[in-house]
Image 1 (cartoon, rainbow, N blue to C red):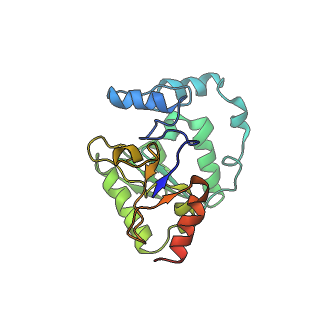
Image 2: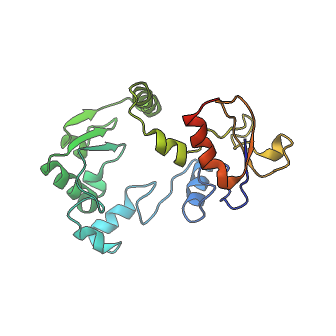
Length: 213
C-alpha cells in the first residue's frame, strides 16, 4: 500500500518532523549529550531549579489546582522522573493534590527518590531495563485486549515498513514505485501491496479491519 505523502510532514525518523523541539533532541542524541531547556527537557537541574526560585516560566500554570484541564486520574505513573526535587511547585504539588483525591501513584525509578517515598507502589527496576519493562507491559495490554484498537488504527504508524539499513521509513522510491515519496505499508489482511489515495487511507484501513480478505 503506498500512501501519497505530498501534504504530510516529512517524518522519516523520530524527531525529524518537528523543527522547534525535535531538532534539538535529535542533535542531543547524535552527540550523546543532553538538551537543557527552559521547559526542563533533558536536564532537570538548572531549568527547573530556576523556575522554582524565580517563577518566571509560565507563571499561570502555578495557579492550577488540578492536572492540565482534566479531572484527577485514577492512576498516576511517574517513570524515570523526580518532580519532588526538580519541580516541587509546578508538578509535585499537583501529584499530591491528586493523591488526596484518591489517585494511585506508581513510581518507576532505579533510585528511591523523594517522589518514590510518596508512592503507593515503588518499582525499583535495574538501570537499563526500562525497555524490557515497557515491552512486558505492552505485551500484557495486547494479550488481555486492553488496547484501544480504534486509536491505533487512526493515530499510529505501526504499519509503516522500516528499512533495516538506515532505520528510516520505506518509501516508494526505494522499491521502484511511481509514487516516490509515498510511505510503503504491507497489508497483512490481503497479504498484498496496494496503492491508495491519501484521502481514502483511513476508510480503507478501517474497512479492512472490519472485513478482512
